[in-house]
Each structure stands twice: as structure tokens, then as C-alpha cells.
Length: 295
Image (cartoon, rainbow, N blue to C red; front, side, top):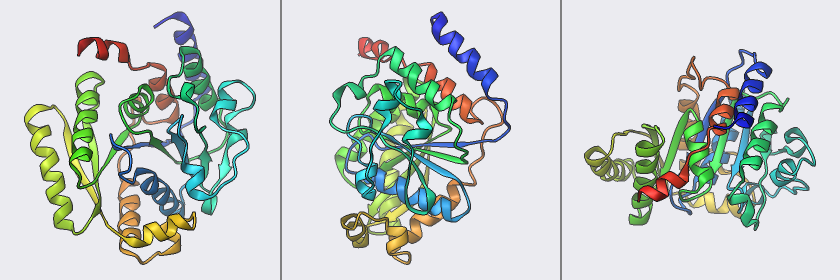
């Protein structure tokens, strides 16, 4: 790590002396289309209803869709922050029930491959943020890009969304393999999404753990089975969230239970228990090049 990164890390330690703990959960899935953005936003709304101050970071830096899903008009996004044109607080938009959204940009290939300078700008933006929060949900991109690995290894919890498709299971396994083998992430919360029954969700989880238990040093925990629910599609068409539009629907009940359960997950007392440690772990970028060379 060069002196520039070391100086930035030292500055962050001095800047943040607050005891306010922030729970940081990365919601990922390996594959696109498994419903992680929908789960992230609905969880955020359910947590807000439980009295928490929640922020959602659209971690798909090149193909943003959180603001589209909510029908929110965005004038500035994370790219403006990285260019030094405004602060992170200034790009925040307010979603339903006061959820804070950090919008990313769409159709910008360069945002998916941030330079070291842009990484530092992102870290500085979070370190200088004044908006108070209790929970940060990071809706990552699909795949195994640098930023997916960065956000996942920096979060306290990695919540992996899978559905009953061979590619979903294969891609989730691949992401778990890389994170556990190369980046020291060994604990994963699994959400079986769009299942037709609790039993189907458990069977899906069993198929995934059959291969992870055999080949990987990773601990998987099934934390929710979200049922297939046509009301989700209806809510998406309205650019609304199912937990507010159809609060008694099966998916809404399951997501509210997941949100309440997630709030009981302990926030570590050591490094990782505060937002600044999330920031500092982002500072230590995954050396993806080493992983590529090792293949």
C-alpha cells in the first residue's frame, strides 16, 4: 500500500471517533436477474418502518437501476462525486418513507473500473458524509467485478440472493469461491428468492451447500425463503415497492421478516463495527490482478 493510501487511512481514523455503529450489508447474487435490487429496496423500507435510518448504495456503478425502480428523478449521481463536483450528501435522493439513496450512473463503462484515484475519491466521499444512518445496504452489481469484490469484502455481512436456476447456483458458487478463497470472506447469508414453497427454498439451499461444503471453506446460512409473488411484478410496473403496495402479500411478509431478522445480526465491536471500518476496508482494494494471474 503506497503512502497516499496510508495517509488517507490515517486521516479516516482521526476523522471518525463516533460510537455510532452502522450495520453494513452487501446484497449480491453472482448472476443478474435474481431479484437482489427488489429485495434490497423492500428490506430498506421494512427497516425504516422499524425505526431505522437506512441508506441504499446503488453499487452497480455502470448500470444503475435503483432510481429507475423507484421512479425517482436524479440530477446528480456518484460520478459527479468522484469528479469532485459535489459531496455525497448533495447527491443523496430520498426514496419512500425517507430511505436515502446513493444513485449510481447508467451506461458508463468507466464507472465499472475505477482507478486508484477514483477509489480514494469514493472513500473520501463516505468519510466526509454527514447524513446520519443506522443501516447501509449495498446493492452490488452482478458478476465478479472489482467493485463487487470490494463491497462484499468490506461489508459486515454478505447476503447472497439465489433462485432456482442452474446459472444462479453456479454463479453464486463462483462468487462464494472467490470471496472465501482469495479475500477472506467466509460467512454468507443465503436468500432463496422466487421459490414456490419453503421446502423448495430449503432444497435450493441444500444443492448449493452440497458443493460449498465439499470444496470451499465457507459457512452458509439460509436466512429467508422469499416466495414467488405476482404482486412484485405489479409493484415494479408502478415503480413502487411491494411491501408498501401489497403489505399482506406473501413476498412482503417474508421480506419484512428478513428485515427484522437482519437487524438482529450483531455488529462487530472490533474493526468492521463502524462505518469508517467499512470505508477503510474499501481502501484496501482487492488485488484482482493477482486472482486473474492465478487462474
